[in-house]
Image (cartoon, rainbow, N blue to C red):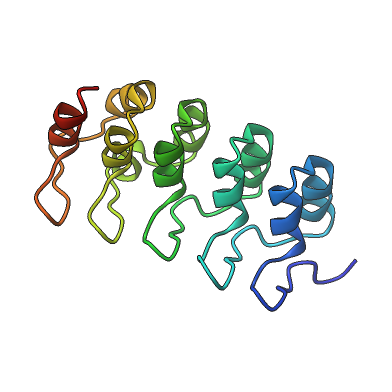
Length: 160
């Protein structure tokens, strides 16, 4: 197989599809034996395969992508990183995996296009356990979004 990273019309690659459908052996084959690029983003939401693996809470594929040196700092069309996605979905089990490969202080406080950090998403979704993991890794509970709202204010409003 050659050039398995060439995207389709919508920007997805064979690796995107292997990840989306949970085919870990195909993802491994594409990454290890065919040098598929793990950083190609689709054309619509600008999501890399890592975003889909995080959304689906697939720790094995997340680890494979990290082993292939995927850019964990990549952002989607809304400026969200993989940590934002994990926080929004309440996937606290993925944080240790995602944080081991990069600087946790920078990552946990990264802001999307609205100024939301991953902790904002935890507060919005009432994901208390995920919020605790973020706080243990240096998340700033007083980080303001572009409207001046902090995760602490959101949590107080939601009573989490």
